[in-house]
Image (cartoon, rainbow, N blue to C red; front, side):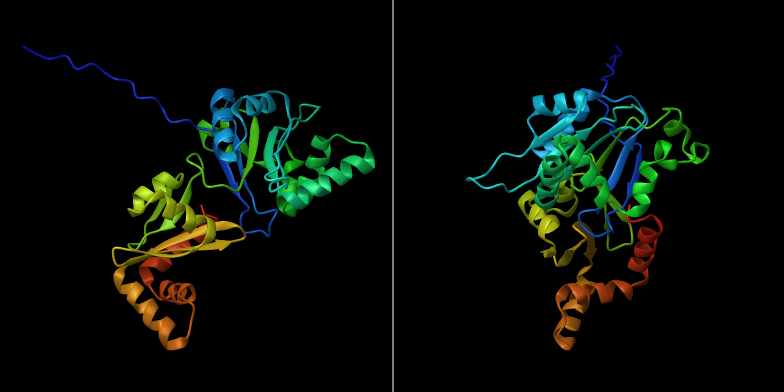
Amino acid sequence: MFKIKKKIDKPKPTVLYNIIEDYSEFDAPGNVTACAMTLPEDLASHAKVLSESYDVPLGRMTELLAGGGVYVYPQQGGLLTRGLFACYLDPSGQAPKQTYVLDLMQFAEAEQVARSRGRSLGDAAQEVFCRTLPEELRAKLGQKNLGLDYRTLDRAVAKGGDIKYIDFRKDWSPHFKRLCIMPDGRLVETGGLEEFAQLHGIAQAQAKTLVEQGGTLEVNGEILACQIVNGQPAVARFTAKNSAKAKELAAAKGLHLMDALSEVAYNDPVMMRALVRRELTGGR
């Protein structure tokens, strides 16, 4: 007697972006990653992910993605601690949908622009946001499809046609991959704190502290190091041998442990290969 195995269709992971351009090495607040999509927007999934990423109520996020506008973060204890989330829709329909966050300083500037020029907060936010972007990215936003040559794009990306939306992200979310240099030279992608914590065998709270504040964490004799560069976490894991070398170097030369780890990494041919690949791929 033969058993017939039932095929179970596993849900496919949500794909939000198929074009990613990294500008995270620029000074804040222009240090963003432009995450774009050429395929039709899955509004429900898009809204869910952005709602979770930016702490905006799902219903309000859905409205914003459908019709544009801004969400001003509520005060905490009578004080504004965050700026606003914006979804910009080009009135002419020529440019793709754009989402981004303004920090408190940008928000204050946008309010001033809106008052002094009699403009909506959304239009003022768009002006302020674009003004702070790196010049290269500003120039690309003025071109169709970020000035990309579709003849050189992957066929699966190009067949989607024009870019439908761009999310200018700075966060560490399950749908936004970042790299970690491993002791054996591999560049491993993780998407979100939970996946990052699982990869390294640490608690999610430890992962959150590390990628938000930077620093080092000892894990089974090895050291997991995170350096915050222009607001973005750059992560590497060091073997027990290299960790010991870095501690000795720090003690001998009076260096900060992070500086000692960097020196050890640059003298390790295996890790150097990973660092060179990371440079060649723009930190992706």
